[in-house]
Amino acid sequence: MPELMTPLPELPPPHLTSFGWDRTAPFQTSQFWALNTLLTKTTGLLGYSTCVLPCPGPPMEAPGLAVHGETAPFSTALRSLVNNPLYSDVCFVVGQEQQEVFTHRCLLACRCNFFQRLLGPKPGPGVPSPVVLSTIPAEAFLAVLEFLYTNSVKLYRHSVLEVLTAAVEYGLEELRELCLEFVVQVLDVDLVCEALQVAVTFGLGPLQERCIGFIEAHSQEALRTRGFLELSAPALLPLLRSDELCVDEAELVLAARNWARVGAAVLERSVAEVAAPVVRELRLALLAPAELSALEEQNRQEPLIPVRTGNQAQVEQIVEAWKCHALRRGDAARSAPCRRRRGILPREHHRVLNQELRE
Image (tube, rainbow, N blue to C red; front, side, top):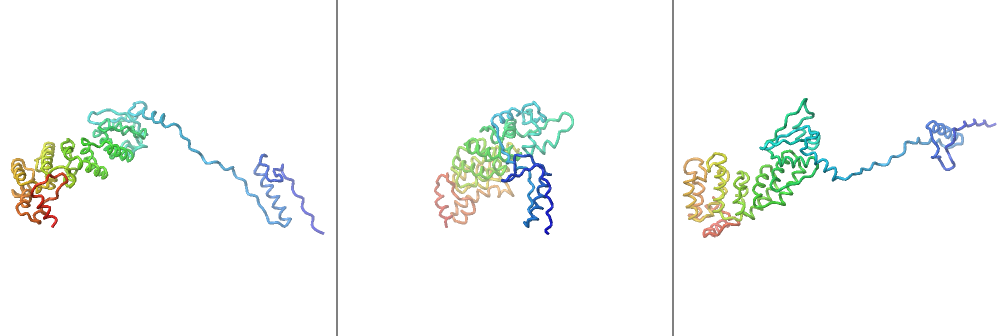
């Protein structure tokens, strides 16, 4: 006689319907395990494989959604803190005018690694001493702060190169790119040599190429600007090496002499010493004999060709130019710069030099 089945234990209040879980009823973990045990025993007695219900977890949470408020009021509020002593905890003294500028340590530190290193992790006890930044004008420094506080800045033609310099020195790449775009848009004869100097100083290759191209197209005007006279020798060299300058060689020699005179006055050195790094790029062989004679006489009174070793070296470059005229041979022509620039005025001997160079 078959063994009688063990009576099934009574379930807690049921939460199962004929269609599945009654999701409207409250459910406790203890009730789940009781039901799971019951089903396991039942299926075993009926010859079915054991079935264990999965333990229900917490409901799936929908992914968060980032929402944004209006940016204009936020930017305006932060801009109101620029150079505002309210809540300020750092004071800078900037520029030759030694203007006080009030800032906020936490904002500068989180926006710029330069200021993070400069200001340190936390202020010391007492009232902190002002931080002196004497090389940057106050207007440019305030523009940098405006960018750090609001991620936007109003640029002006007369000060953009100073802001660009600060952006490079402070490692603000985004501000640097904004300044570069603005410089290209406003580039003109009066600004181009100053921009070239900044480009050479900081290795800004694309800006340097743009400036040289502009000067090549407007050579005579650019050579008369104050910015040209204030160029460093490394900034002047790529100009003198260009074949595309729209200027005659005699004018270029005069411009180089004026440049060397200004440098000599500033550096308290001789004209020849200042001109030494660049004078070899002047193409004296392109001058006519009469022009070369006049240059030689002027060089005796005010040496432009620098003295190197002995009296012979003083006129070495002029001697090479005379050889091109006297010998009219290809090897003599190749011993001195004889390539014609785009703006060179034609002279009788140019035809012979060009022919010899082609051979």
